[in-house]
Length: 209
Image (tube, rainbow, N blue to C red; front, side, top):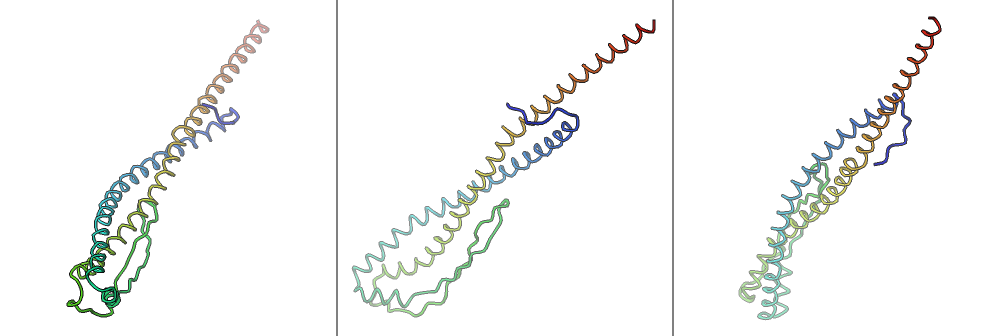
């Protein structure tokens, strides 16, 4: 492990020790943050998986109902029924924070239906498809929110992990190695000065005797 390019002086040693304490404290805080992020990420990932399974299961079923309805009724009747049951969707994207990560929070509402259609001339499959579509859209928006949250948290986890690893395996070890080097160098200089002083003292005593 290479040392930091610092002169081996007591002043630099004091500064480096303070920096080392700050780095170690920062490492602990980031490690705690990473643990918290991972816990939240796993919980949200499980919710996303569940929501994704629901969407993947319901979409083919709804499409199948529409296909059957299109076959069993005339195209005009089907289109008129869909037109008369249209609803506006108002979507508002707010922001939420999870462990410091800004994630989307969807607020949505459906407007009133524009009209009704005759159940006599439409197939039961069309009725079921239309009634299921609103619940499906709700689940689809929920899944989209969770998917983006998972993506943003994964990015933050990777960024935090890199910072933790940099501190743990590079920054802190280099500081510790440099502290050890400077301490040894200062001890060596101290021993050298002590030996020199003792030699000078011995010479003076020899001259006085």
